Image 1 (tube, rainbow, N blue to C red):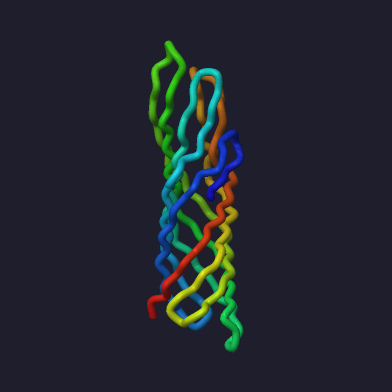
Image 2 (cartoon, rainbow, N blue to C red; image 1 turned 60 degrees about the horizontal axis):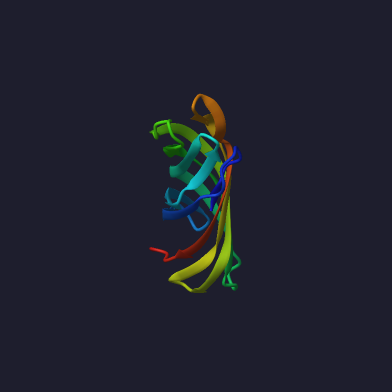
Length: 162
């Protein structure tokens, strides 16, 4: 789930993350996220689907005790968010689509269980901010926005590649 306050509901996202270990505890990640179900904003003039695509590079530290199958990571990342709007309007207004791109930065944390060395399950959370607030306008009126702050929560299934 991905949520940004400003009038829309949460979006259901799918994510792909590629990690590269720098040491036993530090690593880099390249992360991509795209909507499975877009967020939406509705008003008297119509409605719009708000799709958010994230691409980022992160640095993380892994915390795990040697004799336990549980793990945790924390880190930070930066990247870009591409926000798309696909609008349906009430007559006689004309439907439209638009998009915007803005830089983002976030803090990230995850915790999980590693039942075997080649499989991990867990939860990942993000809390971030965008450089710009993207406004949604219906017939010249502000209907909502995306940005400045956002949060995300992901369920993860991970296959480590050593």
